[in-house]
Image 1: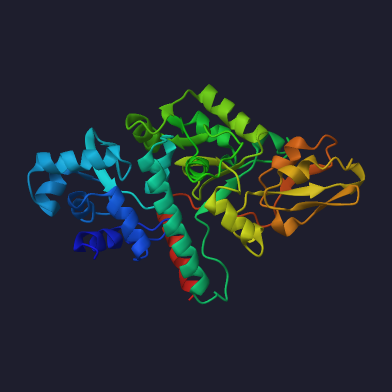
Image 2: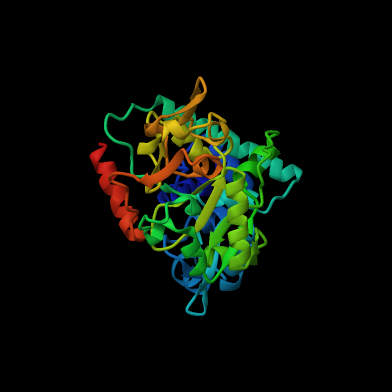
Length: 366
């Protein structure tokens, strides 16, 4: 029987939102009971949505000895359950969402152990349960909810004559970031722990700003220079990985360089009826069939199946193109190019605008 503290923790995780909802079921409780001790769960469930100093939290909300409260919060931060950072010289804490958040932190460090395998299987079981819930839910009749993620195009493949918005330039985010970290790709490491390895590079998961500092401080990754960050980006592009990030323009919190075979978000985009309506970049591929040599390199790299071979010529399905630019980077004849997408989505500026867009989308879908 599930302890009441875990029921309360499930409610708190649900309120954090994110790409992985916290739906009460035996699989969720098996997972959170492994991650949180009962004492940690009770404390985590009381954390407010906004980051809070441990002393204020202990005095005004949690009760108990401030030193013990701080010790428990620190332990959860070390376990990748609670985010911590400094604001105005004061350390603050808040509970992460399941994803992006807790899931990523469990695997970004690249640990291989019996416990990491157990946690991988628990997340897998819960993911399967979520898919069953989704399959049993009524099919929505209107447009999809507002995208949590957005795709970022391979920047060097954008034509020089095109005016590029700052939010389409990963290089600009890198140039303006005080902290950048690199860790293990949590999606591919999770797959490897389950016996489903991937031949793509794993050390390409990037975080920025306060998230990068937290990740490095707690041993989930390492800080890198801006020069090395650009090298990581180039290595990911050469491997045919897709850049995706949080759907706001003010800053990048993280940059996933991932593959559709392991990333659940990219997988859900590919499996959508029209992937280009779910999460896209500002660009779309165009094909000049007369210039196509029929080598098929682009078909092999396209993770959305937007490109196929018909005889000796490549055919482009524009509705499946998410504008990642990977295909353009391997085209030897220049038959594939990028152009601005008509009605290209403009990402919300910050979290406040994103939440407003999400609420509006949900209301329209009711």
